[in-house]
Structure formats: C-alpha cells, structure tokens
Amino acid sequence: MFRGGQTLLTVIAVSRSGAVDLRILNSVVKNNICTASVMADKFKLPERYGAGEKSVWVEYIQLASEYKPKVNLGQGFPDYHAPDHVTKNLAEITTGDNPLLNQYTRGFGHPRLVESLSKLYSPLVGRQINPQNEILVTSGAYEALYSAILGHVDTSDEVIVIEPFFDCYEFMIKCAGGTPRFIPLKPKPSECGTQTSAQWVLDPEELKSLFNSRTKMIILNTPHNPVGKVFTMEELEMIADLCKKFNVLCVSDEVYEWMVYAPKKHIRIATLPDMWDRTITIGSAGKTFSVTGWKTGWAYGPEALMRNLQVVHQNCVYTCSTPIQEAIARSLEFEISRRDSPDCYLTALARELLPKRDFLVKSLTENGFLPYVPEGGYFIVADWTKLGGKIDLSKESDRHADYRFTKKFAKEAGVLTIPPSAFYSEQNKCLGENFARFCFIKKDENLALADKLMKEWNAKQ
Ligand SMILES: Cc1ncc(COP(=O)(O)O)c(C=O)c1O
Image (spheres, rainbow, N blue to C red):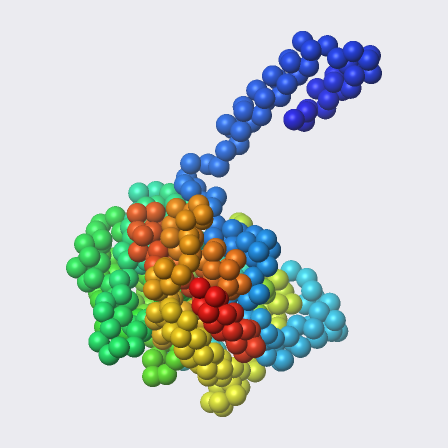
C-alpha cells in the first residue's frame, strides 16, 4: 500500500521513534488510498477499447498452467516440427556469412521475401503482383489485420463481421473508432446425416440489410476459424456483388489457405471479377509453414489500398525480423520450385492433416460430441450438449455454458479446448454456447491420448 517514497520514509521514521502515531499513520493510509483511486481513474483502459481487456487466449493459457490438462487441443499450433528445410534455413541465416541478415531490413518487407510472395501469388490471382507496392510484410497476420483495419476504418464507418470471428477483429475496429455490424453463420440441418462445416451459412437477406452508405469494409475469413467452413463461389459472389454495389472494401483473412480438404477448393475473393481493386488479402507464414512462433504474415492488394496499411505499419512496427523473413523467402522459393510435386509442403500439409481430422471427428462422435467435419483449417467445432447430463456445471461460475463446459471438461477429462462464444459479439454469444473448439494439428500420439482420456472420462460418468 505504501508506494510513494516519501510516505514510506515517514512510516519508517515513525516506527524508529518506537511509538506509532496513529494520526500520522491514518493520514498516510488515507493519502495512499486517495492517490490509488485518483491514479486508477486517470489510467483506466481508454473507453474506445470497450471490453477489450478480456481475452480467451490469456485466460485459457493461464488455465492450462493451473490445471495442467494432459492434452492441449485449445490453441491453434502444431506440437511437432516444421519441415526441416524451413528451420534449417533460419539456423544457417543467423550464423552464416552475411552479418546484414541479422540487421534491419526494408520496412515494408524484406526484398527477397516480397519477391517470393509475388512469385507465389501472382499466378494464383491471375495478375502480376508488384512486390514493391502491392505487398506488405507484417508481424503475423495479426498485424496485417491491424494495419488493414486501422489504415482504412474511420470514425463513423461501419464494418461487417461474420460470426463466429477471430476475436481481435472487433477490438481493432473499435480501436479505429468504427462500428462493427455482426452477422452470424448459422448451422442449417444436415441433409445427409454427416454434419459438415458447409452447413454453416449466412442468411442472404440479413447480409444485404447490413450494407449501407456507411459500410466501409467487410471482413471475410476463409477457410474459417473456428468452423472450418470454406466459402463457396456462390457465397463469395454474393459478398462481392454487395461490396461492388455499396463501394465496400473486403479484407480477406486467408491464413488457412493451404489447409483445404478435397474435394473442396480455396477460392480467393480477390480473383472474382472487379474484386482485386477492393480486396486486401491476408496470409501467414506461421500457418503456412507450421511455425506460428515466427509471427510473420503479409497483406497483398492494389497499391492504392496498400498505401494506408504501409502508413500504419511504418509508424508502429516499421520493420519485421530480417532473418525470419529471409528464411521464409528461401523456404517459399524451395516450395515454388517443387510446386507440382506431391512433396510441396503447400499441398502436403492438407494431406498430412486429413487423417488427423478424421481421427478426431471419429473420436468425438464416439465420445458423445456432435462434430461438424471441417472442410478447411485445423479446428473442429463440436456440439457438447448431449454430454450435458454427464457433467455437473453447477459449480462453474462463468456466464456462458461453453466456458463452464470447457473448464470442467479440462479439469475432469484432462483435455483442454476453447469456448467458441469467445468468437461472438456480446449480443450473439449464446449462439456459441453449445460448442467446444478442438484443434487437430497435433501429434498422432496426442490425438490418441485425447481419445483415451475422453473414453475414460465417459466410462466414469
Ligand atoms: C483467422 C485467423 N486470422 C489471423 C490469425 C493470426 O495469425 P498470425 O499468427 O500469423 O498472426 C489467426 C491465428 O490463429 C487466425 O486464426
């Protein structure tokens, strides 16, 4: 309580005299309480951040360290090594002959990386992407989103956000002074018995009703986290038509672009007629090469739109890690050189993940969940409510049932998952409450352990 140096000295002086003068002590306590409350008022979280102080990631990482669940299927990262050539590249670069590869590089993107990104994406979007002014390298896709949103959204602008959504979108829009307008994907009943992420759809009329003269941007995420939906051509056309009609910018978060399961195909909305000029597409080296800790991403789009992102980036990050960018550039060059081979990691990744997805879907079904088979990404959303009678959530204090379920399940079964209501706006959180999100980019032995733990848990109930 005695924080101020002067106050502390007063207390010590009083103590040394042998007799504590209560009047002085009271006034010291009072002053400190006053100071604390005056400081708390002045230094509270600024209004524009809304409820931004709560994060499911912070809370569930803390939970993992407290409960020590035996398997963590919560956060989205692999628990195994990236391809050899990727990590070797970085090791060689940092200890190699060229000392400059450990120093600052070009702010908008290391030259070798923007060149290789242009080589990778130009054929995919059917136009020559200018590496100098149509690509920005960022500190993870996270910063690409931040620069796109802060660079384009102004006060009084509206931004359409499809729910469930990667939770930082809302915060960033509010941070820019904009207003998020939410529209949920809703699961329609299955037509063939098996549930898939394709059942999660937008209501076209509801979507149309959100577009107006104040709409600046729509944020699309395909393949989708957490549902695993891969948007169809018809759905993308519907979004594109509205963007063109209302002169709206599309930010397309495509960090899971290489994890799409046949026969589904990833479609880049930037390739639809007249959409290049109004689309910023976002990618992630962390997701592409299974090195999420490298936190390097990018945005690409037309020069006129990219300029705004550059302004934000140059003033808050300026330049990203040089050796990591060089390593990603070399890794991309290598993958581009074997693009047609089945060994190319950009194709091999989905092939590697498919049996993991199918194993976990089967295990979840056998253990009383109702999973939606994802068409892309590395998450499964599964309905847990059939297990409701087997688990006592009455002592869990969280407001939302999925938080109560995932916490109790982590404690009892030893399997950590993520509550999807974290991916909904305040008014729609109830839409996520029946589900839990499971990540399957994990070692086979850990998926097998999750299966065993869930079976043991079920047998005990
Ligand atoms: C949909 C989505 N967008 C963006 C990101 C952030 O990617 P990065 O780790 O490259 O910042 C993630 C990470 O999980 C994500 O799921």
